[in-house]
Length: 223
Image (cartoon, rainbow, N blue to C red; front, side, top):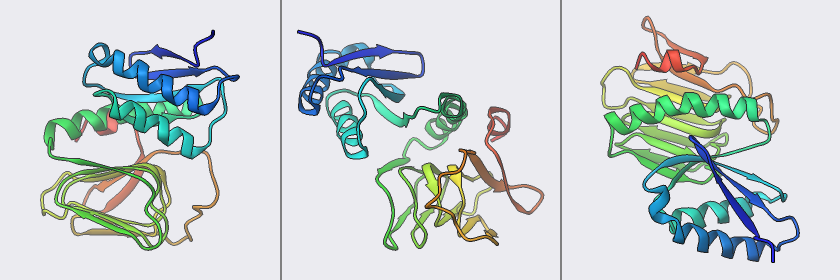
C-alpha cells in the first residue's frame, strides 16, 4: 500500500508530497501519525510548508497545518504556493524578520485567520498575522506587525513610542498605516479582491516620513 503522505525536509521548510489517490481523511490521519513519530527529529523549528501531489482547498490546508502544529513543536510560518520564485524570495526576507522578532521581542504572538467584518486586534506585543486583513479591519500593536497575507485594511505599529518599529505584509495595499506618530493613507482604493503579482513590502519611518519599500534582506538588516 502506498503512503498517503511523504515528508521531505529542506533547510527552510517542509514539503508534503500527497498521494493523489488517497482521500483527505487518509492524508490527515497519516500527517498526524508521522509528525507525532518525528517530533524529536524536527525539534522546535520555524518553517515554511509546501504541499504538492494533490489539490487541496484552503480549509484542508489549514487542517494539515493544525495537525502539524498539534503533533509537533514545529511553527509553520507560511504555506508556500506554486509561484516558487516569489514565495522563496519572501521566505528569505522573512527569515530576517523572524530573527529580529525572536531576538528583540520573545513575548510576541501569532494570530491565525483572516480579519474581516470590522474586526480589530490590539496587543502590547509584536504580532504575526497568518492570514489577510480585509478593508474595515485593523491590527494595532505597541511593537511590530507582520502580515503573512494581504494587508488591505488598517495597521498601527510602534504605539510604545520607541523608534525602529515597522509593518511588513506579503501584499501591501492598506487603507491606512501608522508607525509611531507617522501616518500613511492610500490615495487609491484597496484592490483586495484582485490578486496582483506578489510584492512584499515594509513600512517604516525614514527621514521623519513613513515610507513603503520593497522587502529585502539588506533593508531588514538595518533594523
